[in-house]
Image (cartoon, rainbow, N blue to C red; front, side):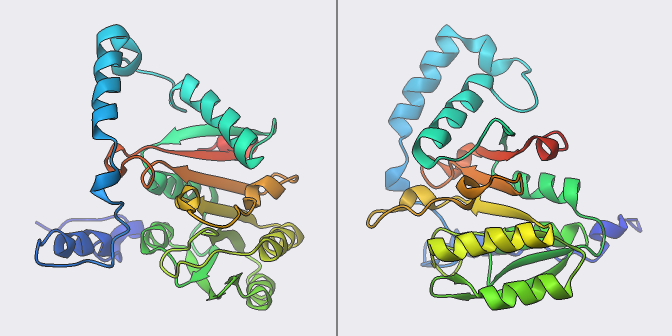
Length: 258
């Protein structure tokens, strides 16, 4: 049979991440490609006890349909936690729970990108997100990652020469794959340039809670007084990737389109 695929996916190649995980599953292979947390860190006993308690005492809350933006108490807890610990989020933002951070990338792409729109990203960057942007026929423009974050001169040049840029995609903490953390000065400059050129920042922060030394650097979202930063957080690295739970803090006009 001749399958008639949509224009959006007709030129897509098979998932590189899927291929990586095939090789990583081989017990003879020591994989340095997948960002898997250590299984020793999975709180399996605690998850089992909590799941048992919830299913025995409040099963309807977890088994019945709920609001599409996610479990309300969890959203409120995350809102309070992010404000208290990271000064992230304001009354002009809202929060949505997603099935992993990749769904955030997909929802943002669907809401923001037209064919040919530009996503400015770090070079190199996380292949999963890049493939999501490509699936919406976006053009990717890379900016060199230096030891303290994106090259700011290159970033401004990319913004100047690509007036149809919609998103600056950045992983500011322990960047994948470089491991680089963007310094505070560059975070401020990235924010200022996004504001200057009218571009949204998509701040992907799955690794921020894995800091074991040094001081935390404020999220770019904590600098956001203009409603131009979308923040993606995840429990995949700190609880379990198999749970597929992430959250997005976005300006309300963006939130309403997700």
